[in-house]
Length: 260
Image 1 (cartoon, rainbow, N blue to C red):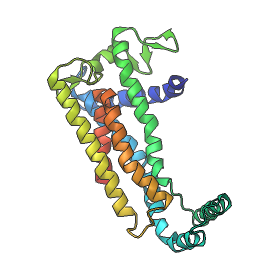
Image 2 (cartoon, rainbow, N blue to C red; image 1 turned 90 degrees about the horizontal axis):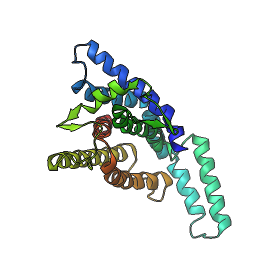
Image 3 (cartoon, rainbow, N blue to C red; image 1 turned 180 degrees about the horizontal axis):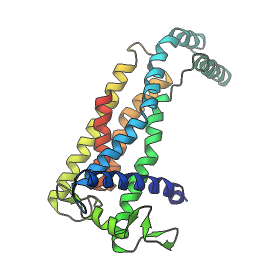
Image 4 (cartoon, helix red, strand yellow; image 1 turned 30 degrees about the vertical axis):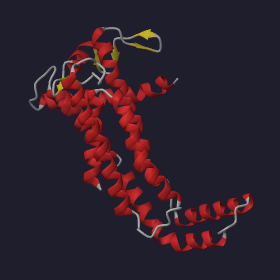
């Protein structure tokens, strides 16, 4: 079921990826396996990040708008201070939501850029995951054999499969058996990715959230949770990422840090 939902996204990403590669070839990059496939992933990442700039600006606007509602927020908290019964908690939540609605503030606006990026990340993963099977002629979708994923045919998949980053093929993972050197490269890239993500999220919090903001505020709590949860999640999931996906993630993390 999940694969069927994700398949159209994977096809769309495949089309964009291949068209960017075709443009690079037209500009003079070598045809076939090579650096053009790596650069096309980097450019694809930049296109996605540029597309979600409006959501990033909305995130900043919402974060800063929290400053304006703090006096009213504190009054609500003082009003229900010490009241632990269900009715009081419900009324506090209702008044808080009404306050957010009145000032058009969303404590979860910071999640929007991430929610938009996730389908693209999963689609990139699925597209690269299919490359090895497509190159071998054994690719299947919905229990039926097919010879392509959008524009990625067997010959195109063979080109991608032969393209490398520091000697590691784009479709390989840390468990593909490419030797100790490949494992070291994967570990370094995962560390770089997670470190960049942590500092970009932390910098975004410190710049866009006032120091006086109540630590019990839902926005603060969600931001702090994401600050530590997301890097931890990618440390684990990074072990399953193909080299091509790591290129995507490191590029996205660099953009996020520069955007803060």
